Amino acid sequence: MKEIIIVSGGASGLGYHLVKQLLEKGFTVCAIDFNKKKLEELEKEFHENYYSFCGDVSDQLFVEQTISEISKMGTISGLINNAGEPSFKMPKDYQKEDITRCFKGLEGMILLTSRVLQATSESNVKIINVMSSAALRGNQQESVYCATKWGERGYTESLKVAYKGTSVKVIGVYPGGMDTDFYQNSRDYVSLEKQHTFMNPKDVAEIMITNIFNDLNLTVSDLMIERNPKKD
Image 1 (cartoon, rainbow, N blue to C red):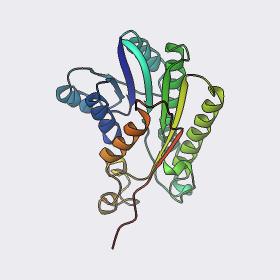
Image 2 (image 1 turned 120 degrees about the vertical axis):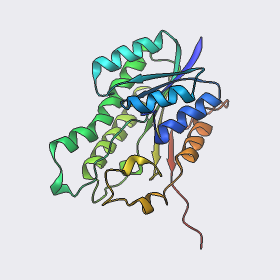
Image 3 (image 1 turned 90 degrees about the vertical axis):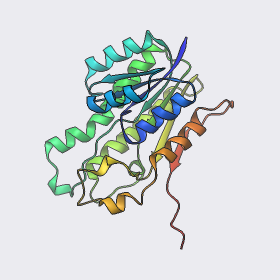
Image 4 (image 1 turned 30 degrees about the vertical axis):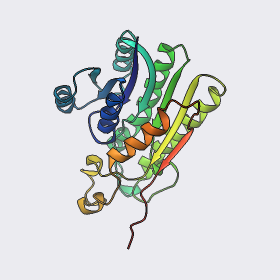
């Protein structure tokens, strides 16, 4: 049976590098993303052991159908909840659409996790929730984004309690800013120049995979990843 890792938000940024490096390590990888064009590009780049599913992770029917299809392909041994969209504004400027967009990541995390736990009969699976350093502090122009990340952190900690002592392993990942297109609609907040000072997503993916998917009889429970201060 194939050993399958699911990566949500797997078409670009950190998700893309996670997919690429997991494939290089011999896993079968299923990428979930709403960006059909980018998924099609990856299908040309990756061939063997790569599968893509296009849809919204906050759509319950899509999630149910996708996990059902994936579970027929082999054994789901890992889920990396990486999907999410930001909205960076001052607190007074938020609109309903900003709130809805931010909370889709949290909704998707819960829906995907619950269906994967059902599909695996709550055993021998790693649930990796990629959040942000915004889950650890408040930021002036990230109030709604922080709210979703704090919610994801609360959900992650509750999962750990629920599955303590079982073969379900829950890992929280808290990366700082990465040099990706995540900020492309927020140039008044993060300029392109500032973005390029952030961490390389390829490096972040390598740290995650090295620590989480290893042959040692050890489990990482939390992983905080930040860039080193610039040397003079």
